[in-house]
Image (cartoon, rainbow, N blue to C red; front, side):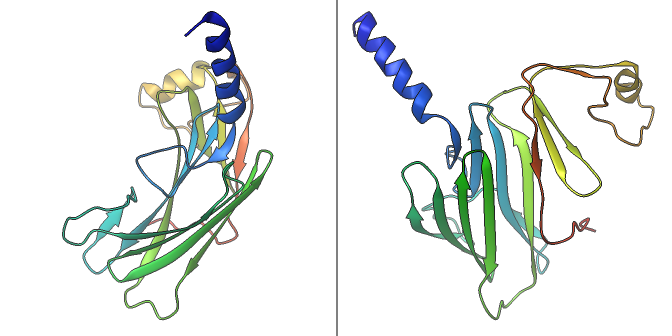
Length: 190
């Protein structure tokens, strides 16, 4: 490759690798915001055996593996649809985004044989820096490097704090905050 073609390739990569899409190859139910590397992963927990499905993959051949049916998927990730069946639970996950806003609709199919719980994990992937904190009514993800203040240092030493992440006195570099809301109330899993 010449320097000119390498530069053109880099420009294309920067244009394509932006926004929400299913960039994570470990789970088809993970939406990732690039370039930050913020992942929003959907999973399932069933109570009959007490097992969880945290990563959803196509074509697993093990006993009890999930079945994945891919639906529509826009090239740029503006819409995705996936149906997953696992442990007597079937859900359809639809996502849509415009700009930086992502909306997800998770629909259980009628007459589920077993009770289950939808799980949502939010984290920064691929060693990207950032923090995720629980606010009273939502989750907040802040990318970048955080310089801890004295409260954070006390928390790391084992002193309990009411909000152990990202106080207003922290210094955040590359600030782009993402707030994650749900229409259903948060339930702590027993």
